[in-house]
Length: 146
Figure 1 (cartoon, rainbow, N blue to C red):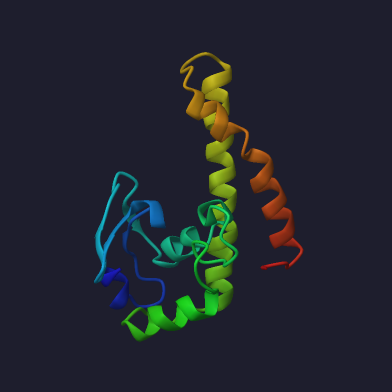
Figure 2 (figure 1 turned 60 degrees about the horizontal axis):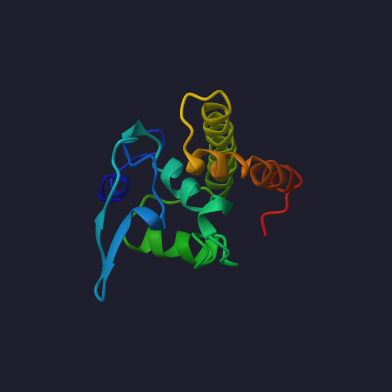
Protein backbone atom coordinates (compact mmCIF):
# COMPACT_ATOMS: atom_id res chain seq x y z
CA UNK A 1 0.00 0.00 0.00
CA UNK A 2 3.03 2.27 -0.22
CA UNK A 3 1.74 3.73 -3.47
CA UNK A 4 -1.47 4.82 -1.75
CA UNK A 5 0.47 6.76 0.89
CA UNK A 6 1.34 9.55 -1.56
CA UNK A 7 -1.93 9.59 -3.48
CA UNK A 8 -3.89 12.82 -3.61
CA UNK A 9 -7.69 12.55 -3.71
CA UNK A 10 -8.67 11.42 -7.19
CA UNK A 11 -5.10 10.45 -8.07
CA UNK A 12 -4.71 6.96 -9.49
CA UNK A 13 -2.28 4.54 -7.87
CA UNK A 14 -1.34 0.92 -8.44
CA UNK A 15 -4.27 -1.09 -7.04
CA UNK A 16 -3.71 -4.76 -6.21
CA UNK A 17 -7.21 -5.80 -7.27
CA UNK A 18 -7.53 -8.83 -4.95
CA UNK A 19 -6.32 -7.35 -1.65
CA UNK A 20 -7.37 -9.83 1.06
CA UNK A 21 -5.77 -12.03 3.74
CA UNK A 22 -5.62 -15.05 1.44
CA UNK A 23 -3.09 -13.16 -0.68
CA UNK A 24 -0.79 -12.04 2.15
CA UNK A 25 2.29 -13.84 3.43
CA UNK A 26 2.85 -13.37 7.17
CA UNK A 27 5.56 -14.26 9.65
CA UNK A 28 6.12 -13.26 13.28
CA UNK A 29 7.11 -9.73 12.19
CA UNK A 30 3.98 -9.06 10.13
CA UNK A 31 3.19 -8.96 6.42
CA UNK A 32 6.16 -10.17 4.38
CA UNK A 33 4.63 -10.23 0.92
CA UNK A 34 1.53 -9.84 -1.21
CA UNK A 35 0.61 -12.56 -3.75
CA UNK A 36 -1.59 -12.75 -6.86
CA UNK A 37 -1.04 -9.50 -8.72
CA UNK A 38 -2.88 -10.59 -11.90
CA UNK A 39 -5.76 -8.16 -11.23
CA UNK A 40 -3.49 -5.15 -10.59
CA UNK A 41 -4.44 -1.93 -12.34
CA UNK A 42 -4.33 1.84 -11.96
CA UNK A 43 -7.18 3.13 -9.84
CA UNK A 44 -8.40 4.46 -6.52
CA UNK A 45 -6.64 2.97 -3.45
CA UNK A 46 -10.00 2.79 -1.68
CA UNK A 47 -10.87 -0.05 -4.05
CA UNK A 48 -8.34 -2.29 -2.29
CA UNK A 49 -9.51 -1.20 1.16
CA UNK A 50 -13.16 -1.81 0.26
CA UNK A 51 -12.27 -5.26 -1.17
CA UNK A 52 -10.61 -6.20 2.11
CA UNK A 53 -13.96 -5.48 3.81
CA UNK A 54 -16.02 -7.72 1.47
CA UNK A 55 -17.98 -10.07 3.72
CA UNK A 56 -16.93 -13.22 1.83
CA UNK A 57 -13.30 -12.61 2.85
CA UNK A 58 -14.15 -12.82 6.57
CA UNK A 59 -14.42 -16.62 6.44
CA UNK A 60 -16.66 -16.72 9.49
CA UNK A 61 -14.85 -13.95 11.37
CA UNK A 62 -17.15 -11.46 13.06
CA UNK A 63 -15.16 -8.28 12.36
CA UNK A 64 -15.75 -6.40 9.10
CA UNK A 65 -12.12 -5.99 8.01
CA UNK A 66 -11.08 -9.45 6.76
CA UNK A 67 -12.83 -10.96 9.77
CA UNK A 68 -10.19 -9.70 12.19
CA UNK A 69 -10.73 -5.99 12.88
CA UNK A 70 -13.14 -3.09 12.83
CA UNK A 71 -13.36 -0.63 9.97
CA UNK A 72 -12.46 2.29 12.22
CA UNK A 73 -9.38 0.61 13.75
CA UNK A 74 -8.20 -0.38 10.27
CA UNK A 75 -8.72 3.11 8.85
CA UNK A 76 -6.90 4.70 11.80
CA UNK A 77 -3.96 2.30 11.37
CA UNK A 78 -3.93 2.88 7.60
CA UNK A 79 -3.80 6.64 8.04
CA UNK A 80 -1.18 6.42 10.82
CA UNK A 81 1.02 4.26 8.56
CA UNK A 82 1.04 6.98 5.91
CA UNK A 83 -2.06 6.20 3.87
CA UNK A 84 -4.05 9.16 2.60
CA UNK A 85 -6.97 10.34 4.75
CA UNK A 86 -9.96 8.06 4.25
CA UNK A 87 -13.36 9.50 3.47
CA UNK A 88 -15.65 7.01 5.25
CA UNK A 89 -18.47 7.29 2.69
CA UNK A 90 -16.01 6.77 -0.17
CA UNK A 91 -14.61 3.71 1.61
CA UNK A 92 -18.11 2.29 2.24
CA UNK A 93 -19.01 2.82 -1.43
CA UNK A 94 -16.02 0.67 -2.40
CA UNK A 95 -17.04 -1.97 0.14
CA UNK A 96 -20.45 -2.12 -1.51
CA UNK A 97 -18.84 -2.16 -4.97
CA UNK A 98 -16.55 -5.01 -3.85
CA UNK A 99 -19.50 -7.11 -2.70
CA UNK A 100 -21.29 -6.46 -6.01
CA UNK A 101 -18.13 -7.33 -7.97
CA UNK A 102 -17.72 -10.59 -6.04
CA UNK A 103 -21.39 -11.41 -6.71
CA UNK A 104 -20.85 -10.98 -10.46
CA UNK A 105 -17.74 -13.19 -10.24
CA UNK A 106 -19.70 -15.93 -8.44
CA UNK A 107 -22.40 -15.85 -11.14
CA UNK A 108 -19.78 -15.99 -13.89
CA UNK A 109 -18.07 -18.96 -12.29
CA UNK A 110 -21.40 -20.75 -11.86
CA UNK A 111 -22.23 -20.15 -15.53
CA UNK A 112 -18.83 -21.50 -16.56
CA UNK A 113 -19.61 -24.71 -14.68
CA UNK A 114 -23.28 -25.00 -15.71
CA UNK A 115 -22.56 -24.50 -19.42
CA UNK A 116 -19.93 -27.25 -19.32
CA UNK A 117 -17.03 -24.99 -20.32
CA UNK A 118 -15.24 -26.07 -17.15
CA UNK A 119 -16.60 -28.83 -14.90
CA UNK A 120 -14.51 -27.81 -11.89
CA UNK A 121 -16.30 -28.50 -8.62
CA UNK A 122 -14.62 -25.36 -7.27
CA UNK A 123 -16.53 -23.23 -9.79
CA UNK A 124 -19.80 -24.90 -8.86
CA UNK A 125 -19.14 -24.33 -5.15
CA UNK A 126 -18.25 -20.68 -5.66
CA UNK A 127 -21.35 -20.22 -7.79
CA UNK A 128 -23.48 -21.30 -4.84
CA UNK A 129 -22.20 -18.27 -2.92
CA UNK A 130 -24.12 -15.84 -5.14
CA UNK A 131 -27.03 -15.75 -2.68
CA UNK A 132 -24.66 -14.62 0.11
CA UNK A 133 -23.61 -11.58 -1.90
CA UNK A 134 -27.24 -10.73 -2.66
CA UNK A 135 -28.07 -10.72 1.05
CA UNK A 136 -25.01 -8.62 1.89
CA UNK A 137 -25.86 -6.07 -0.79
CA UNK A 138 -29.43 -5.76 0.50
CA UNK A 139 -28.10 -5.21 4.03
CA UNK A 140 -25.62 -2.58 2.82
CA UNK A 141 -28.31 -0.80 0.82
CA UNK A 142 -30.41 -0.66 4.00
CA UNK A 143 -27.47 0.93 5.82
CA UNK A 144 -26.65 -2.13 7.91
CA UNK A 145 -22.82 -2.08 7.89
CA UNK A 146 -22.54 -4.52 10.84
